Amino acid sequence: REAVKDVARVISRYNDMIMARLFAHSDIEELAKYSSVPVVNGLTDYNHPCQIMADTFTIMEHRGKLDGMKIVYVGDGNNVANSWINFASRVPLHMVICSPSNYEPDAKTLANANAAGISKIEVINDPVEAVTNADVVYTDVWASMGQEAEAEARKKIFMPYQLNSKLMQHA
Image 1 (cartoon, rainbow, N blue to C red):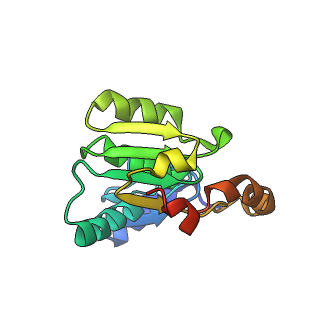
Image 2: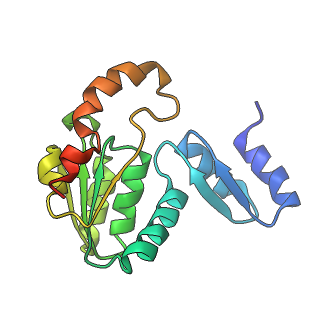
């Protein structure tokens, strides 16, 4: 396997920008460090900013705004949840992350976003409480890339966090 810094230097010579989907977030940071062209994070194990950009655009298309909305993410506090939290540190909204207690989002990301003081950001473990009065309810996969061996166990853990008509009656 080639070193990330070597790959960055070579690919930079042939492109005006690099968009990369990589497992390790440290790899995208290293790619950006050694690249001579802009690097766009297409996905890492820490965040998924392009997904949030596309999804917020869709929400705006359907709802007309984002400011002040209550957006609830139900599921694993994974890369998508971290990206929603980062987004909420820049756009004023009420962001709720609802995850089982051992699957909450990155604590440092949450602390930094709350320190920005832009949005009300909450982590709630009860799905019914979380979705109450939500403007948007959002979810993601229960087993992300690299977690295939945990899929069955995670299915049992996340079943109470399934978006279904019973839960959505509370939104």
